[in-house]
Image: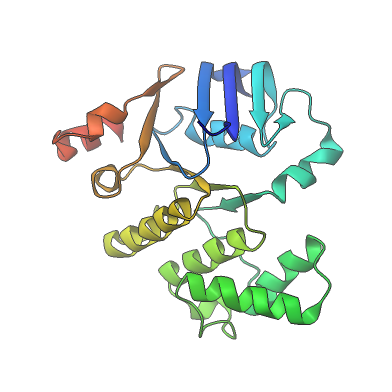
Length: 240
């Protein structure tokens, strides 16, 4: 069995002085597609933030790509984040520059210097997300779905072992959201671990993966609930 890329044992996740999750036990591996579900405020995003060092791990054992997240020094967090791809719901694209310039900015910031290699890598990731002919456009000239594709391309630039997606379909219509999850599924099939928070439980039936529910300060593996023919409407009402 592959070594876990993320391994948590009895971890507490706290937001300021409030403990949002306790006794978190996870082993997530290369090529897996993982959903985090649960009500607003149940700890999904907070857990995601501990994976990239935005929130501190207070207790337990927490390893991400070999980094000890309980003891990691601030100066090492940028090194960790270069190995991660992070997809935000609100895109966070630089609005004053083109798609190509947005992606070039990230590559230069992570140590790329050769202009030809930068151009080739940008063209490669944009083609992978179906945006090969849109690099010259500014973000405000793109639809929400197109912007999210660019965000995913940006997250793929440095071939991350782990892709973290926080509600990537939250601002999109149903069909566009489905296309985005299909794209993320393809990334996991290519070998990356993908961890995605979502409220859209219909996606769990169409694009199966491991499912963890955050509720009552705990995280539970509920994958078996989504491998059969459970009522999607009922599950949606229970979790939103």
